[in-house]
Image 1: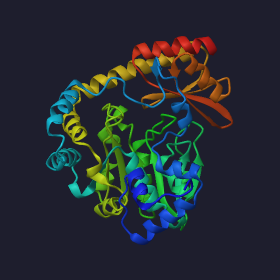
Image 2: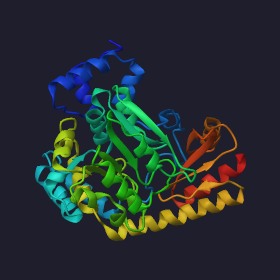
Image 3: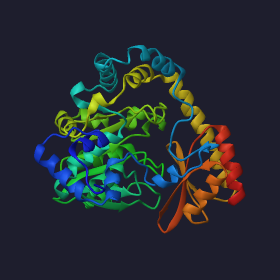
Image 4: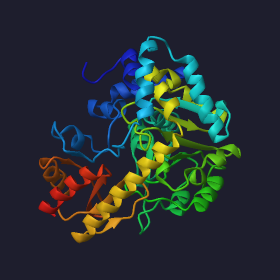
Length: 390
């Protein structure tokens, strides 16, 4: 039937093995009763504006809409993938143990603090299901990455949106003020997507220390590798100190693994166990991806080169925008957001007609474009198209 799904298709579609039969059955029943459009919102891995992606031209000259790293994956990673194919008929149990061991050793945590999955998206969904159950409140900035809160809201949670500050950063004080007895989770994306802004590390740490005594704090660090010192800016130190913090990481950005799918969270062992009830975990990651992640993890030379190229392309973009008289938000990630002078969907469509894919938002009663950082050639293609319609 159009508006129902069975247990088998739920597991297959979401890649979730849920623990807690009562809640899982309740979620199935509730989801089955939802309109199909909402079902798809929960079940599909999607962008905030999926239509803009799916309706893009088949041949795109400059794909600048998904915050991907166009310089990766590295040659070492590609070789590891090729070499893994002969044994890819085997489950990668032992190799996964090697990967989790490498990550845990580098971050200085125990493997019991670590949960891996096929990208961070499945873990975000697992968090939405666990922390949003019972109609709990999920507090986020607005705008920010909406995967976790939108899925939680679709399953019955309350999404509490807090506007950004005047300089487009997360308003930590206002977010803390929104905490109530019904709050299930506070979600922080740092650097923030789509604005690219980053919080002061010490201020964020103080916030996390205070707030995590009341409710769990989920810190999404998908773009942290674009900062000058990722380890110093990370909240993983607070996990090691025993605070109720969940830190999400992904290989999808600077590592160039967006299509390979590998991510993880570092949290307290009890939080890891809770999320495992709603996540397939290690078994969702393919053998070639595991081999790739082992080869590419902390591959310093490649990461530094990709970062250097990204920064050069970003400076080029800044120059283009300035010459055309546009203001932009200085970015600490691999994308830049700027105000545009026409309706957002029309702007994206005009750029798409010229072979350039971008994203658009509307907030503060203004239309905005977010352009991902590409190769210098792609940025030149953006500049050529942009000048025609700016």
